Amino acid sequence: MKSYFLFILLLIPFALPAQDVEFKATGPNSVEEGRRFQLVYRVNKSGSNLLLPELDNFDVLMGPTTSQRSQVQIINGKVSREEEYTYTYILKANAQGTFTIPAATIEVDDKKYKSNSLEINVVEAGQEPVQTPGSTNNESGAIGDDDLYITMTANKTRVYQNQPILLTTKIYTRVNLEGISDIQHPTFRNFIAEDITGEGNIEWSLENINGRTYRVGTYNQKVIFPQTSGLLKIEPVSIEFLVRIRQTRQSNNIFDNFFDTHRTVRRTVTSKGVTLNVNPLPSPQPDNFSGVVGNVDLDVSLTKNKANVNDGITVKTVISGIGNLKMAGEPEINIPPDFDVFDPNSTSNLSITARGHKGSKAYEQLIIPRHAGTFEIPPVEYVYFDPDLGQYRTLSSQNISIQVASNGQEATTGTEQARGPGAANRESVKFVGKDIRYIKTEESKLQPVNTFFFGSWKFILGYLIPLLLFIAISLIYRQKIKENANLSLKKTKQANKMARKRLKKAAHHLKSGNNEAFYEELSKGLWGYISDKLSIPLADLNLDNIRQELETNGAQSDNTEKLIEILDTCEYARYAPAGEASKKEGLYQSAIEVISKLESNLKKRKIS
Image (cartoon, rainbow, N blue to C red; front, side, top):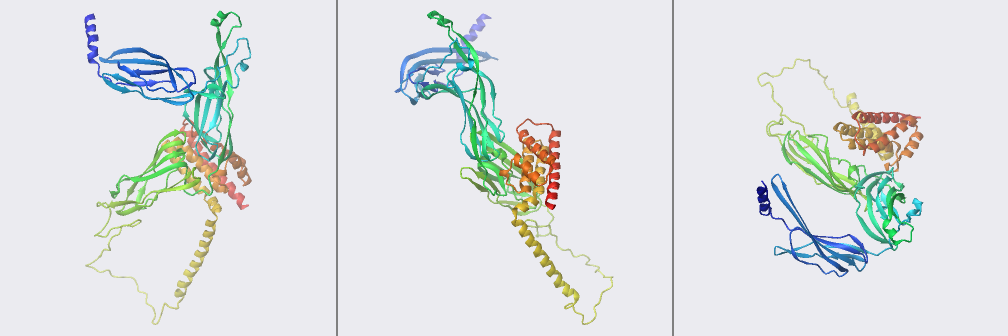
């Protein structure tokens, strides 16, 4: 048995597959001027003639120190072997700045291979980190404010409503950190916040600040979307650190330095808050504004441009770009009336970046032609706000032509066929009764001789009635023009209708199980109703002035509080785990009920 195992080991080098040569250089991202650091080259095969590049700004103090590691694994009869040869150099940085170490070369099996290049940031050498004497009992005074602090900064402080902002929290330390025991995040009351980076692995680098060298790490990055306008304040972030400090024995004996002890203390550090100046979106907003703040593109396409009657065609609209794309509204497509139109399905492929959501949001809508002919879908328009230009922009697609063949499924006669939008099926007049003519059996009404229609009372009524109708229609038309000119009055009258239309979309998302879209549409419906009913721009609304304006216009306080409660629930539920279906159904019914009660209260107020 032993001889068999030895035979297998001897055959391993012949059974192993050939490996690709990997030659890699590693080193620190940043170092202090005059400090030593390691430059390590690793290759997975035995090589020779390792040649370093020119190192003008560094001194080679020692090297190369070589080492070798080899590992063989046999798993389910499959043999694998890993080898690694390491070459270590000790370097010293001579000057400050950012320097590139070019690629090194090595020969493996008579072939030359190049490593990767490295970029190293050399910072000014600072003072040594402070150490805490063992004699002090004041833990809060053991570490100075300049030895450990955190910052919270925004990449921009003057933005538009719903424009993404990058919020970065950094740690600056000159002491030994063992970990974090507690953290207090801001509440982000008037914002929607999403994490870009987690709070786990922190990549540290060195920075020289005011003659001191700090280890700097990015603790967290968030993208926040302001939901209201004005001066908005973000509360400070507070972190409790576990700091390891050394206690030195107070003795004149030099041998006591070998018996230093360490202890861990807690230190709570708080950053400064951030104040943002959020501008509302320009007024008036376009009627078909999508709600997107960013930069997007529009693409509209069909699965096919030629089809038969009753064949399904899918209209696909893709909104792609960067910004607050999760809040992107559905584009409006004018489908000819000769098609049956079904509700669209939406899919998202979005990722969060420093500039907001990046990716695309697609809407697919099924349409079925019922008549033959050539039809056109007019250009689809999509309005968004570009914060860089500070203005609304409109995207427009091309005209889309659809050719529909009858395929024997449409009722037509001869060569005549219904064509064009809204055309009805036509059928040629049939001649019935060729053999037996129709015989009229009713009594005939005869007129006296010399009786004329001209000048009779019927003739006068024939002129008088159209004249009266023309006057009435003109008065009604002028009244409509006057009402339409008053946009505020028009929105007020249609507030209930528009709100129920939005709530209908929310009900659709409720049935399909799309929780985020349900809460989004429900919230939009309530905000839009208050904006239209009270003639207040949406950007000027918040929970405080809603309460004041509704009570001023005669709304009952319990209805007002119920409305604010529903808005709060929607705001938090959009990014919370999905709740029970019965709770969402109850929330939907409560929204309908509160709109109905407010509509009644506000109408009575206006009548009185």
